[in-house]
Length: 389
Image (cartoon, rainbow, N blue to C red; front, side):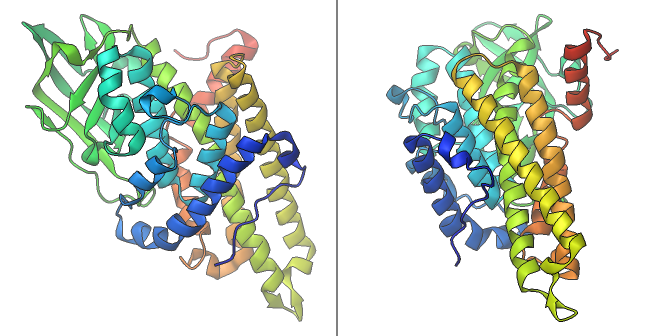
């Protein structure tokens, strides 16, 4: 196995602290040794490598920005981004797992939960002993989460939940679901635990993308939830949108990891593939493709780094996260497609990672806010004019 050396044309390495470099290199080594040797098999068979979860927990990759008193590593946001970048170099499914566990499960419990909820769930989620999922998207409401039909009613000392969620990462294997439902017309968060009466989470099959990820429905039929499982700090639709801001930040970094993997595979192939008595890397069109890929990776890296620094200074705006997610996923998908053309017919084989990343990125392009929705979010910010109906 050849160790991945990274892609860094502008010496961005010099802008990282010693701790940030150590975090990146630790995850890079983990991905090279633990993820890449098994991921093609899992992708082919449509299974999630669940044995990696506790290893990620042991390395501090789950909820790494939260306080040490909950068993977390208290890393900064740039380090968190580098973790997501390296995990997605392995596969979008691995980054998605860690992103959901950290940004969509641990974050709302930490931000909106009680001390008891934090003490119960955060340490075990950080260790990978428990798995979480996030239930917002519904069969009829994706880009318009405010239209959700899932609702809760207060009955005595419990809540009764009815409705359904769809496209839920980790749903079937989750021990706890952070579920968003309307209570008296206001969106609130609830912790729904595996085995609760009226709760089921069937896995969705037949995917051509994110095949190594567990994607599920969540179904609630008179699901009974005790009083203490309401997230008391959740106060409307803004609460789940705050969670999505965390997840989109990780996606912006992760997409660059996918792009780096595709570029690295294409460059190596172009140098070794001989046509017309010379490597195809010697041809002008191939060089133009490689320059395009490297340029867009470099731009994305700089966008991510500045966003991470702003986030660490508590100066970032959600619309900046939208720009980074929109830009980086768009160009990562283009890079995967261009890399496939350099590999030619070999590009569709699972001997190379390119087609797998391309298929995964088609989902990443859509989830956590579609490309078009992020376009309108940014457009409204720069014009002051709302294009949504």
